Length: 334
Image 1 (cartoon, one colour):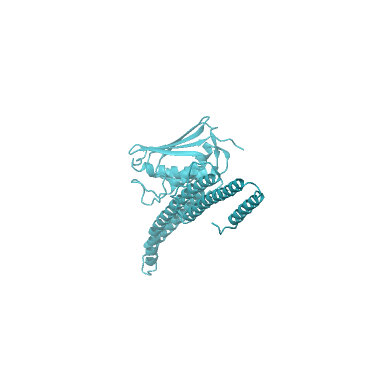
Image 2 (tube, helix red, strand yellow; image 1 turned 45 degrees about the vertical axis):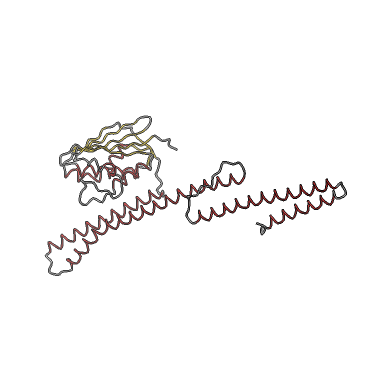
């Protein structure tokens, strides 16, 4: 403690003042001189005790900060006494809680990243292995022309699947990172539905499915047209795939003072009850999923909707169909 320059200066100043006072009262009666000497000693002891306590508290705080820097957030330095050191302790405790929460979030992010990389590797491994095998077969000069055409088509299909996966993951990563700026335009729900149905016309026609759209012309919401179309395409694609030939997909939309709601209903085979809570999880594939399903479309749709002040939920009953409900809560356009 005495190695601290400020503390040494303090004690020297007190000693000098005490000596000066004793010198000044030296001519007074002896009892007065003794009283001054005792008072000076008591003041010196009190200052030393207080300084020692204060110095020890600061050392404890310093030790605590060192433990925090090493990742130990379990200590609690809060107290209920008034004073500048107590305020400092409480502020350090608040910062400690924030650091502990951030550390836990980082830990979860690392786990999520590890799982995502593992899932992506798994999704890429199958088509890459398939293409490697077919490429080796194509190198055989004796391979029949029909097989060569078949293998070439399969390789092209696998490449398209990989391209879609990579593109979708890039979009999702941008949304997760917050680098996507969603527009806030007034959008017609009917326009969104028409644009989302366009790329699905052929599979719908092949399966002879019926598309029923109901809703008033002027129903709208505030959001990003292109991203919303992307979300709706993924939902409709799921409905088309799981609705039988000749089945019906109904789209209805309404608007009220709180939100604009878009409902997509099919009469397909439905989703297993145990799969419903995980439907919007990335890379999740339910019991009724197609073999070539990657499990990323619904996760993307959910991310797009929720990042536009919206809400997406699903209800389903096996054998009777599935209902998706999208709600875009009202916003004030700039």
